[in-house]
Amino acid sequence: MTLSISNRYYLLKTSILLLGLILLIPSIVLGQSNKEQVSSLKNKKVVYVWGGRLHQPEKTVDLFVPWLRSEGAIVEVFNTLEVYADASVMEQADLIIQQWTMGEMTKNQSKGLQNAILNGTGMAGWHGGTGDSFRGNLNYQYMIGGQFVSHPGGKSEYIVKVIDREDRITKGIKDFYVTNTEQYYMLMDPNIKVLATSKFTKASYLKKDSKKNENVVTGSIVPVIWKKNFGKGRIFYNSIGHNIEDFDVPEIMEIQKRGIRWAAESKYNAKEDLISPVYNY
Ligand SMILES: [Zn+2]
Image (cartoon, rainbow, N blue to C red):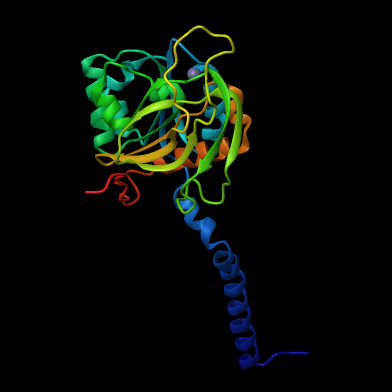
């Protein structure tokens, strides 16, 4: 059978239309994940800084760096705080991940880190490696939005309550339980956006028959996961992670990954309004 020119034209037009539909349908169905791709780590420059006296910072490198690279991030790993004073690295950085408990920054390092964040480099971290890093450095604490002061009872078990179920970092994640890890009691910036909290529910956090005095915290509720802006930079923090095994809890790993992705976008996406005062005025 031979086709007339008009038939051929009709066939061609229909084929193009069908092909267009086939190409269009997945992008409609997957619209949400396409948006997520915009916020991916692909080609983001990540500076991973580890060190300090406590925790297992080197193991976190083994856990997170392969994942960051699998997401397309360009990762540089530093076992020194000197990188913060290196403007050529810091100006390029989209994200800092820091695992450095209880150290000290020089004036230049502190200034370098702060300037980078003010200018739009994000920062994402967890536990003491970010929330108990430089105890004498007020500028650092101002930037992170909280500072560790105690983990009553040492290792403990507690429920993490997701209080923001709309935010992209905690969306779809239910309250979860963590065991054999530290429950951080932190001094807080009262205007950050808190995503999850935990409650101190035990009558006492002293060991049985302990002769120590205790500051009773029973009934206290303390933020566990939050986000905030510092200048143009996005800050994400999660207080869980004393043990590397804490990241075996699927909820905490998922939240940490989402927080990292979110914080890496400061230079590319609009600044969110994250001022969330907890007191009435
Ligand atoms: Zn710890």
